[in-house]
Length: 302
Image (tube, rainbow, N blue to C red; front, side):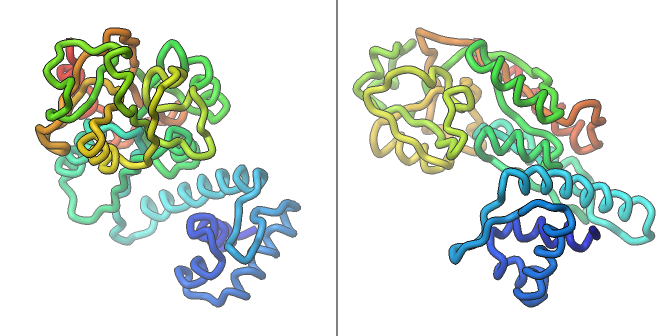
């Protein structure tokens, strides 16, 4: 097994296609396929299932690629530290769909004070936030736990060698646009919202109530619409007088001032925090990012 083989396997997984991976690696597709097949023979498992539509990662392959990414990441760190070349500083976070988490990332980039860097922010599904931190794709993940999902989420974190650090807690709010018929209400109940569509982020294959980004995921909504990005949800709010449930922390810098958060009568506590690999020390940029996140405690609506 070689580092080159690991790099090839990771690239195939990222591309989802042998052809696309071969193009990215500047090698022929047959040569890439042969290298992957040799690797699979050596380790005794199928990393990928091949079809005319691309490749699918097997469960055994998913576990192998997790280790492969760790090895590749560690090798990169060795190169950066000991080989005399100017290297790009790298930092990555994954987060549920929180504007404040994106804004904290922006401030972290501004404070990095370097010209040569490769940073990444992944606003994504709950399961992918966990997977990205587990697989070294991100140093930090931002999500919430509640009385409802805590047991399941903490079990997932333990199984993946991760830990949760709480930042602050907040009540549940109704997030809607300023032109909504209920926008002048001081408090809203689930009964008030019954005739309006509720919006939720699609969690894909991990579509579990416990991994939902919104509180009250088991509520029997009369009208429910799922989407997979924040911009789409904002458009649906305006076009359909829809709403979603949120932390109440509003970042007008990114979403503008056309939206507001109203307390929910049947509120439940959200404990927002970040996950990282157990016993791992935060990098300089990671520490700055966490400090930026902590600043939003003062924005929690009382």
